[in-house]
Figure 1 (spheres, rainbow, N blue to C red):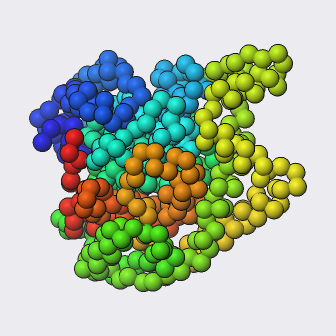
Figure 2 (cartoon, rainbow, N blue to C red):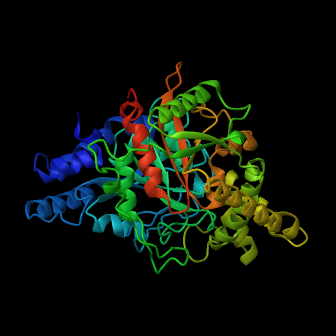
Length: 493
């Protein structure tokens, strides 16, 4: 096995034993980027010299016995182009930020660096995280490592593709309506969306502030637990960050037995509203098989109802676009980023934003401005917030009787590039199973549960947990992963 194919736990064990060096691991990732990224286009940029310098610093610490308290020492981690890394470009997949370079680190980046991670590379994404396919990037389309004619999902498509293609050991993404879980499902890796407030959003360029959450892409569930343990925790610089202790998620997966904690006796809910007519037959078959696996592992499957599910997409596209229209008002061509001069301030704004924003971003700004406008606020935005509360209450009521909820992550496997580009509504429906999680503020994870037959494409299983219930969610996901081998399959690059 090549070094770039190792998981975090495998890699840190080898580094601790000094079987390999951090520089060798990073070079293996750089070599893989050189081999395959011309086909995939997961990376927008990467500074090899800076990354190698970080690797050398990690090797020095390892030689001095400095790994204590640094669970990611020597582990290469790449970052979605929506997170601030000091002295690195920050474009959000958009032209409007021009040559902007971040003057500071996001809190999660500081935490990764403190844990010893080698943070390098900017990963492609849908512009300002608005999209489900990474076709909306101003810097070109990212392709699925399993089939380069297909999309990797979005908006964190570059992050999912880079991990699936073994270009990096792990990656960071952001999830506003499924933007971690959906691409993880379509690329065949693990994607974790933490509870809203579990991870600081300081340094994340906002799309929809009440929905956005940062999370990891990894090669297995244990690595996701390790990453969340590093990333989680209260941050006084983020007013929405919750001051709640962070468990040792990775240690909880070990349990009292060599195989880890049992899920025997846990109740898993199967919502009848998610088994819809538009669900692909092969996706349904894979999820049905996963349900049987959980039963064999000793879990009890309970049918539940989330009655307001039908309103989730409409509610999301009112709230998210409203918040986007407010957040993106700061990109005006005056303070930073690209500027197109005009005869007066209004013309300057119009020309700058017209040239700098892509079609999807403009569409969502217009929708958001409309639902917030005088005469429509109560009819749309206020009503959507009330429905959001009903959706959250559906989940909280379900968690009175079940420990987690099982659903498909996506209604289909990865579709062809360009297939839904001219139909925004069909594109929006790609996130039909993931949106409710963000509206409710709960945690969710997607992990591989099978493949379609022809062509062979990954299928994702979504597990949804209680607010701040990541420990239980990860234990359930880990138990399933141990009982199957889907996560170990590699794309034929």
